[in-house]
Amino acid sequence: MEVASPKFKSSAREALLNESLQGALKNSRGGFVDKRLAAVEDFPQFDELRDRAVGIKNHVLTNLDYYLGQFADQVEAVGGQVHFAATPEDGVETIIDICKQAGAKRVAKGKSMIGEEMALNDALETQGMEVIETDLGEYIIQLAKENPSHIIAPAIHKTRAEITDLFHEHHGKYGLTERVEEVETIVNEARTVLREHFVSADVGITGANFLLADSGASVLVTNEGNGDLTSTLPRVHIVTASIEKVIPSHKDLSVFVRILARSATGQEISSYTSIYSGPAQSGDMDGPAEYHVVLLDNGRSKMLQGEFWEMLRCIRCGACMNHCPVYQSIGGHAYGWVYPGPMGSVWTPLLVGLQNAANLPNACSLNGRCEAVCPVRIPLPKLLRTLRNQIFERGLVDWPSRIGLAMWGLVARHPKLFRLSIGMASWFLSQLGRRRGSIQTLPLSSGWTKTRDLPSPAGRGFVAQWNSKKD
Image (cartoon, rainbow, N blue to C red; front, side, top):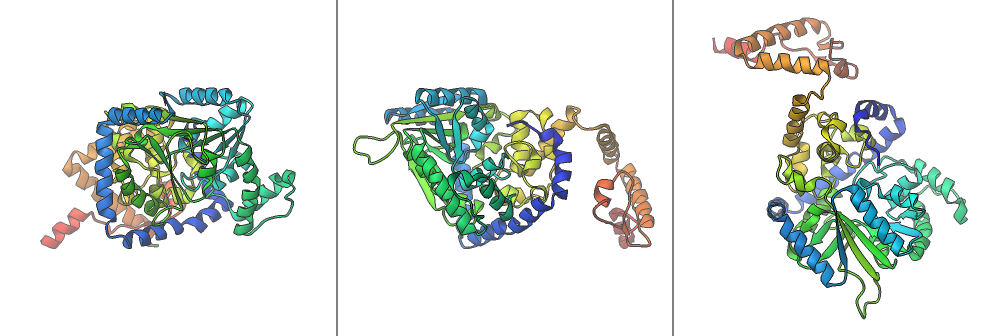
């Protein structure tokens, strides 16, 4: 997937003017938030489990090499194979080799953010393979030739009318010519089309929410069940995951399962929590003949020793973007790469280079909601501020911003100059907004005043008012 993060500002403006997108975002705006709140309020142990999850993740990250080794040993003990990929290119090459050895012509795929990170679909298609996304949301955006806009609801930006048009355009070749407009009929038509692909696929590729070191099992949490069909019907099953997904044991899994669904969709537990343990064994009624796990690093091991190691606790629930006012205004595509929202504003610069995504850490009001709802307590605002500091230090901001920040730094370091400047600015702004009580046009601040009014200040700074009251 091409990185388009440098175009964030123009993409955000386009998103704000896109009536169809704004309608879809409006329809989804309260659902995730309200359901999560209700689910958490009904579960008094939620914060206790969050703390336990943080402890488990921190322990694993401190001993990641040990747990990855244990996981690989257990997978191989049951007849599977683990492939470590340092870069996305390495991962893609490994998967293509597996598919070629299997003589694969058709590949069924479950939703996988690591697959997106590796741009896996495009790579397989260039090798002449047909790739079918089996998650309904991923299938919809595949038909639309778009990228996911949300990590758990890839087609959240699509209206029902747009989905109807897509199905009507693409399903005629299957003899399905009626326009399906209701949710139930849309789902049933997708199920009809995808059923044949499940049966005929040579290789199935899924992601993994967790990897269990003690057994070598991979865990997939879904609401559709397509993961089970993708992993058991094809002759070859490939799991794609990043190295930080490993946790010690099934006991630890119970902690994460109880906080993941509540954080992501407001459910007590997802419809399907599937555990896969290698290829089919003698006596098994189903399962693949080959089982492969491709573990992607892509800079994560370097993060362990740096300022951003806490980002590796992320369990991809999407709660941060569900509660982010910026994401909820512009959707996911404006972020320009695989990961949108607050977590994407940290992940993307770390994975593709700060110079390629310098706008993203500034796409945040630092309101703190993302940290408040994160099930593993990732300090996203702190990490975003750290990235902002690095952006400034490396000269990746435009000259007006550099001058403005330099002037602010000078003023902030000298209390008398600060009070004088604040007093003058407060008086000037109060005069500017005296008639209307608000300021509608302000030089160098058109980004704010173009879409909203700035309340007129009192005319004196806080310290001046405080001192006058004391006198």
